[in-house]
Length: 601
Ligand SMILES: Nc1ncnc2c1ncn2[C@@H]1O[C@H](COP(=O)(O)OP(=O)(O)OP(=O)(O)O)[C@@H](O)[C@H]1O
Image (cartoon, rainbow, N blue to C red; front, side, top):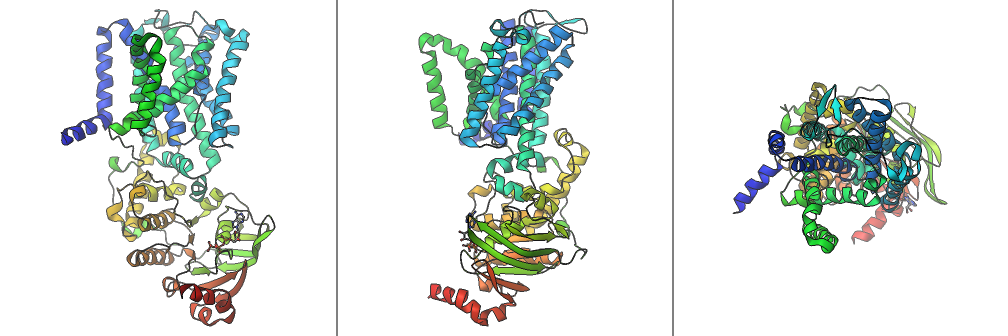
């Protein structure tokens, strides 16, 4: 029984099954009655809408309660383009996508600045504004009476190059569009763009440290989502032949979001399942007469309670976030990191940096220099400013005073993603991985700054995109080997022990092929064997000329690994030198080691 269920799950999650199903529908369409094909058209439009929400909300993590706004903009744009300006069908539909893209981009400017509850409210407001505009801008939209007489496949008034298009031909066109959009989305989501969307979704702080601009990523997500919803709107207008604001109410927005969630956010198959269900459900529920909305509500409640991952969860559908399965890979352990030449030495110069938090001096004038291939430890009691220094160097905080030069360039106060792009990589005191990604995908995310191919190449799986993905996957494989994680590559990281997650985060930091590596307490919570793996990774970086700053309290771990130790107390340096000197330094004993011994006693 279980194996049969597994087989069924395998079949459903297979994209080819979906394609075969769609082709079968295309073949069956001419032999089906007009009402059935019409429903298939509505289902296809809903699939586009659900994919659009899935990209923005499921992948990029930006909730949308106003998607009917994009849908409406697409529908009215194409209708106006054809009826008022005589634009032919393909161009009119393309216009609706372009308009959706432009509005999506514009909306991202305010929406990208807010989160959670405020974002939900803002997207809701967007949908309401569009709805009101449709009602009030009578000269363009026809107001509450709407637009009628739009060429329609359903009525038989739609033409393409003089040939009449009926519902069946229109369905073929829609199906083709759905297939192309889903194929492109699948490739896109499995590329570094998809991983960047997810990185921003899970932690904007961590995304910045990977060289991913949260602002640019969100703008891109809104524009792409608007593009797909606009396309759906374009198709809708020429299917039904009339538009009124009542088709684009807040309820419609909610319905689009709900069908995506019920289908399963984050997967590509989920939105298809949700869209199909929500095309047929209202029709089937008509049998319940006055109670249909109660039954509708119950269906939703039950789905959310029993299937937290939506219908896709029921079928065990997992979207993976790399193109590994499609590529032939080579592994070359030496290819993990680039050999650095001493072009700029010192690589890092920190000059008199002060960091104040509302009057509290976390750093009180810190200066240091770091050479290529050297390892510096920052030690000191809790609250002495070690993490703050790492945060200031990596751009999480702009220093109150002082300068930081990296490769001769003043980077103080630059955004964290710009600093990461320049070659500064870091880990956090608490590992910040994407829990739903596998170990391999998490490490691969670190390589984000090294990709050069554009989004279109990623979406059509261009050769360039494949070459880059193979190259980075091979480097990741070598890094997984160096971290002792080769056997865990395919495991979902959120299910793994803390030590593995930490090691994977260090491997991820190295995957960016950095010049400077900043490790914030990387050995905390590691077993002895894992700590050895960590030492191996740091040495690998060092051999390749990477400069390393490591914060840690474990003297045994640091001994033999570091070239220089800097001890902090209350934001000031109280010792700089080697480990042996530190152990006998009176100031250090008084401020730090004495305290450690007392703590250990
Ligand atoms: N974002 C912040 N806002 C306000 N105060 C902060 C902030 N970040 C750090 N601090 C304060 O700055 C001081 C230095 O903290 P920091 O985290 O750098 O110390 P640390 O040496 O890394 O300590 P630990 O070993 O506990 O991580 C502390 O007093 C801390 O409370």
